Amino acid sequence: MSDRRFPKRWFAAALVPVIAIAMTAPGLAQAVRDPIELPKVRPYRAEPTGPVQTPVFAPAQSNVPISSNSRFNRDQQIALHNISRYFNSFDKMEGEFIQFGPDGSQLEGVFFLDKPGKIRFHYEPPARLDIISDGSSVAIRNTRAETQDLYPLAQTPLRHLLSKDIDLTSDQLISSIREEPDLISLTIVEQSRLVEGSLTMIFDRKTYELRQWIVTDAQGLNTSVAIYNTRTGRSQQRGIYRIDLSPFD
Image (cartoon, rainbow, N blue to C red; front, side, top):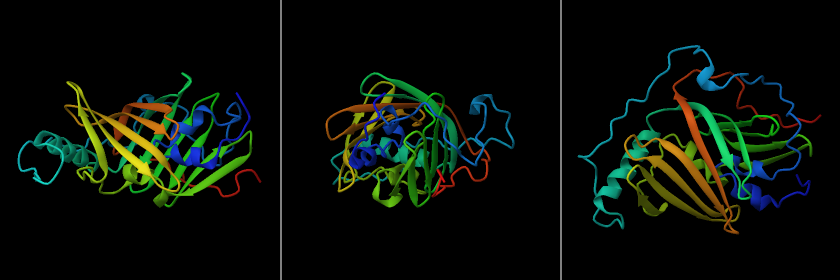
């Protein structure tokens, strides 16, 4: 892998799926030093430490507010309403991810989420990159280069996925929606000082669960992330979202 550093705007653009930067970040062969011990097994293999809660969520087909001013049709507005309801039906989630880079490379790991504002992506060897949001800041930590880049959460598209009460029904936020027999995809376009590109989120057509997302950067390069073996409502390890401001001292 190349050891060259990428521009900070590239890192910021990748914050949409948070983990898109790992494909090309330098020095992924070394493990990240971290005082927080992460689980040694994957979430779906681990024995539960408490009751696992399934979100109480039933897709709505009626009593959905339909706007005649929206550029989305009735069925699309219902789909956006149900996707928003699904996101808001849980606070905690964990699972596994697999990431495909624009060069065909592949990485995997585990993720943990606690709304509002907290998420952690931990890459399995050889890519022990960690990306952490503690509710106010996002840290991208690279051990070999001994760097840690920090970004305000509120200035990244990550805020859309980590909001306590997300609203994906607005056609001012959603630029397009595409419906397939089994999947629904919607796209958010970001044009700001920190981020330029788009995020496409792909959901199951029946359950409205998030299955995959694709980030497209300003150069038109795509990084795809699929999540699976997800669980919600499970108690999580204390300190897992803590950002060490001096991790290499």
